[in-house]
Every structure is written in structure tokens, then in C-alpha cells.
Length: 201
Ligand SMILES: [Zn+2]
Image (cartoon, rainbow, N blue to C red; front, side):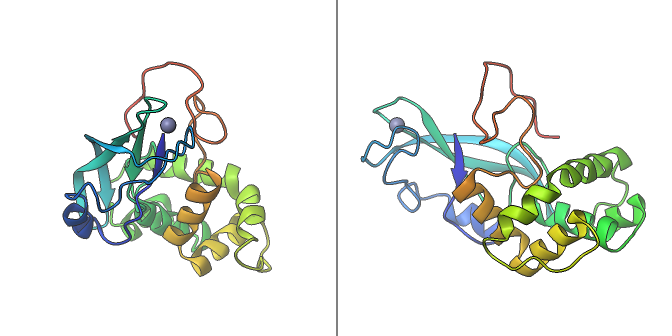
């Protein structure tokens, strides 16, 4: 199960923070609610593309001795099952869907010149399918602004709240994925069947 790392900051700061296993150790298991601190259980590596970073980051894992399951702590700038950071995707979607940029110009706004246009289309498609639910959910944080459709309303709400703050609220509190969970997962992001995990796209 993935939960959010309590750390807030840049990718570069994250590398310094993650070295100490005690700094962010969960004090209970979110899966079985056992009220015991979890044991550090190494790292896994995942890829990440941010505005100033393109490479692998370590993700810290903890083990619950009661239910024998692991919990990984994902930094808040990363989205589960997506290689690209919240910031990069936000820059793209704002340019494309709020600013009316072409796919190519939106990729440049996201500092990803030369990105395959299909990737941007994939983000747009997933965001569109989430927009109405996002508006309803984010209304807990901010009054929905008037906008011609759910997509622009959701984008304006995300801009006002801050994308990473909104992601933290959606994911940490509600298990709501900003761009929707992949189809092989249940609505709250838990694995429904044993299938090989595809690498982040
Ligand atoms: Zn447990």
C-alpha cells in the first residue's frame, strides 16, 4: 500500500530527508490498524520526471509485523503509477486545457519539449474523466468558481488550492488519484488481483 511521505519539499531536499528511517516512520499500520510502529524495510526505486529532475528516486518501505504487509511512503510531488510529477502534469494541463495551447506548446510549458503527443493526450483524457468528481471533492476545501465546464472549474480549483496540496488532500485523506487509478486497481487504489505491475508511463 502506498501512503504519502510526511515530507514536503523539492526532489533535491527529499534525497536528504529520506536517509533517516526514523524521521518519517509511521506510528501505526494503515492496513490493519495495529497500533505499533512499523519496521524500516528498505527501499524500492521508481522513476520520476520533474521540472528539474529526470531519474530514479528511492521510495522508503516499512513492514507491519502484525499483518506482514508493507507500506511505501511516496513523496508528495509524485503520483502513484505515473512517472511524471504533479508539477509537470499540472503545467501541461493548465497550458492545454485552460490556456488553449497546442499539445506541443503545452509540452514546452511543462518543460518537456519533444514529449510524445500521445502522453499529453493520455493526461488530458484521464483528467477530463475525473473533472466532475474533482470539483465535487475539492469543494470541501474551496468554493467552486464559476466556469463554463467541469474541466476548467477543476483546474481553477487546483490552481487556487495548489496542486500538491490538493493531491495531498485527495490521496492521503481520500485515496483519490488526481488522474484516476489505473484500471487494475479498485477505486481506492488497492490491488484487486495479482497481476504484474506495469512500469509507470
Ligand atoms: Zn498491519
